[in-house]
Length: 239
Image (tube, rainbow, N blue to C red):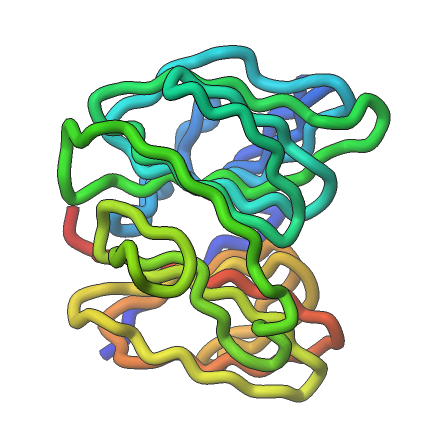
């Protein structure tokens, strides 16, 4: 029997710092909800908007897989490994924090906001050597089909992390269906609607809603609006 947990967009944690407007699907910083600590190894799903010229100063991380997916604008990244990069919509960035890194993230433009998802995944190996990667994705490859953007394997499609997780994105026309089959028994999938309306295994989801499903073999998605954008995150449910 499948299990399901629904996180409507308006029930997320919210922090508006003026320069930063952030929504938290799971407990983060000053937002604490004992029922929303994580979904399996998915620890953080933040939906951030940063004003022009602003950003996060240098700060540390360790033993966490950190994935950034820009939605609008450009984000400038610098870290203690010597990387200095700009990531923009249509790209994905990953860091394995491992034994410890420091990094900063700033809006690369002075007047236009940058909007992005930042996702933290608990790794399956601690104290690895820190690593950084980013890549440009072919956004046409997700039109009415699933595009893999992350996996556990360095030579597979997309970026890779130290965890048995797979991320896919899709952009669906109204009325179009796609089916996602989970790759590993015991995993669950967290569905996050970036834009539009979609029915996932019978549950209607709207923009920025999240739905976690586990004890299943597959998920059926049907778009109820044009230009629907969805992120699917398959993750282990056991910590």
